[in-house]
Amino acid sequence: MSDPHDDYDDDGNSAPALTDAPARKALGQHFLFDPSILKRAANAAGPVKGRTVIEVGPGPGGLTRAILNEEPALLITVETDPRFSEALLSWPEAQSGKLQVIAKDARKVHWEKVLTEAGAATPVMIIANLPYNVGTPLLIDWLKAGDWRGPMALMFQKEVADRICAKPDSDAYGRLAVISQAVTRPRIAFTLPPGAFRPPPKVDSAVVEFEPLPPGQRFEHLALLEQIAGAAFGQRRKMLRAALKPFAKKRGMKAEAWLEECGIDPTARAETLTQAEFRTLASSLA
Image (spheres, rainbow, N blue to C red):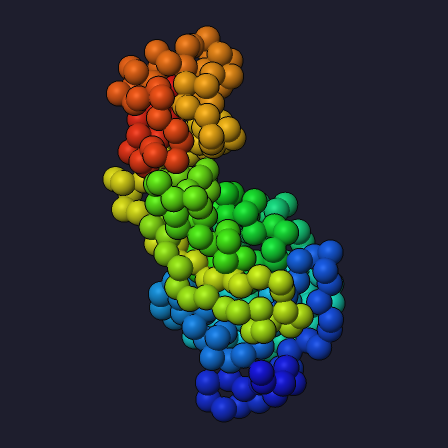
């Protein structure tokens, strides 16, 4: 591991020291300092140069520095921990306007408003070593976002990454895979062991790259798709006609008849349904 006080930019010039403060368990913080890992993470979603980038949970600033080294047009960081947000404000890039620091809980940020006020070019990239306790809710929000959201490279617990990228007929396949794959093409870019972080978590982690699907392939009724997938996988051991019965009843339908009308076997289980079949169910109610 490199020393957080020994940081240099790509030209070998001394850069502002990373903030040397301990991680807070309550905030789900686990920090990366290895320059080679940080560079891989910064580039996992594609070239950064000239793009607008959002980073959530910069912490000491290791990934922030790695992204800035790739020459984005603008980097917007969102950090709820004042120890780190205040330190980042002292960086020369913050003074020049290339780095914007928002001291706020990322779950409360109105992203489109922030981008509009910053005059940011869209679609933006999102690159983040996400705090473990907010990673999934943030991902769901970003998947539902409009055209302003472009490619993403996000760090999750390996188990969550597996669920995002899972295919039908696998144990990891569930609601998260259905939603993620409705608008993006996710893949695990690389995996990291606990020892890569300070402090080390108890599990492996992975960076997931999310490549946006072409406009014609994205499913537009994502909230409805999420509801159906949630109901189907909420009782994944049951046949679909039983798992979806409460969902269908609230809408004045009989689950078995609805499934048959959509060309889906009512005795099948959720983990066997393809992305196309879940879309068919959602489209029939849209």
